[in-house]
Length: 420
Image 1 (cartoon, rainbow, N blue to C red):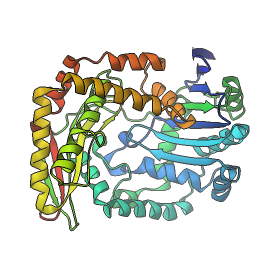
Image 2: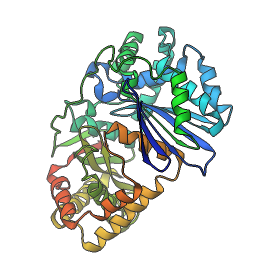
Image 3: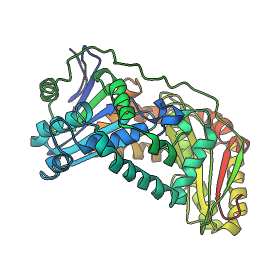
Image 4: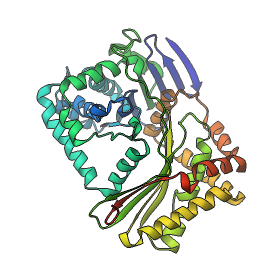
């Protein structure tokens, strides 16, 4: 196997079968965060199978070849550890946070979940109902639902617009065979990244993975998964959806660029300044000066083939038009003027602080390692990343604000009373 030292205590191995393993030694802690990322998720689903990756993530916890559902729940929790999972647009993750001495147990459990789930038909009806309850929770939470609606309107012909949870109709129609098909076509070593950070030695992780059979087999899947292809987003549209609620919820947003695009630092800097905290323009204008909202913020997300940047606000129905007008005015000012030199320097310091603080735990270090492999990005030391943030120029910011913060580019979804 090919092992490369990327930095002090940080190693990367690529196995002959395509599996990628990254570890980082943090000698000052007594725990390890370890996880398996599968490059199969909602972006690889057909519309009629929407939610199948998320349901599969649930179903692996119903039992494996070695453990019952209760044994899976107890195996690490009984030792003070934690076991978790999530499904995103581009990947599905299974992770554990345990004492360093329990790493062999955690690798065994994670392998069980990813490689040896039973996926029995008799378990499906119960777990399907759990997911339907999860969907109902989103439907009862309008400040969550408005983001689902926004994604659908921004990318109506692309899986990035699908609900990760699926719909009531698609989830109700999924079978155990559907889950087995996704597992068979996506849950193989070459489609996985394994990362661990904490009090852990790289050779120990490789030995444990070898015991669990991770290095066996070829890189070829049993059936190829569908590719994620970029498709145009719908820009500059407004959609109003009637909803009986105490507030009107609005999301403004547009498509941007993938994670691999180095402009992400400039965009993140602008997003922070625009609506990233109490000192941001939107918070000061919409909440402090006008008193139109309790919650108002800007956000961005980066995916494999695209990204999104937007703004959320929740306000009373009678003030929704005023809030929307004020947000559009702030968009227009930012697109027209960019950022003054003082704001640019403050934004750099804020983003650098966020980056450094985000790496204060084994879990965040583990996720950083996995992100490198998932997006095919070369490792750079923290100082190099901070230097790259410092190198963002006024011209870089002006190009970002002019293209992506033009108010006419934003698609708007309004959910609430009188919105229809």
